[in-house]
Structure formats: C-alpha cells, structure tokens
Image (tube, rainbow, N blue to C red):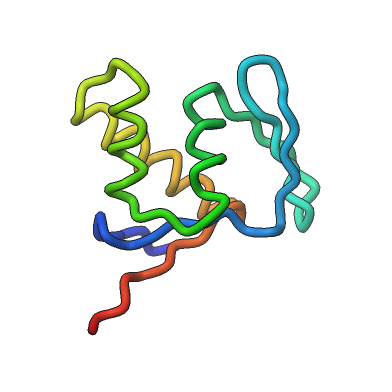
Length: 99
C-alpha cells in the first residue's frame, strides 16, 4: 500500500472491525481476515477519533494535547499506527479533495 498522506488527508476506521475494551486499550477483530489486533491506551484514543473522518494533523494535535509526548515522536508514532491500521484493512485514507 502506498502510504504518503498529507496532514490534511483524513483517516477513518472501516466497518470491517469490531472493537472491545481490553485492559487499558482495545482489542480489534478484522471481520474479513478474522485476525485480532490490540491497541494500547493511546491507540484506543486514536481509534475513537477515527470513527469519523479526521484530518491527520488533527489526530496528531489531539494526541499532543492529551499526552505528554515530544512532537516529532508523536508524528512518527501516530503515522505508524495509522499506516498499520490502513495496511490491515482497519482504516482508510481519504485524500483531501482539491477545490
């Protein structure tokens, strides 16, 4: 999968996953592959954010506002999680429409 989003592109969770709370995070079941994934507390927070399309910049800002993390580390970790979700069919990237 080609993952090269702009910070204005949106990410949205697909309907192909079922989530349930698991400890401090979430367990996700991909309904198409029957593979389980686990998300820690930060991942669960991001999962909740992307239930509706969210610009990547807004996701990063929300994580920075909620957690005490370096901005570069936040960008790298958020981008890695979003890419992983997309590669596993749990989220999709919606490119910003050029007006």
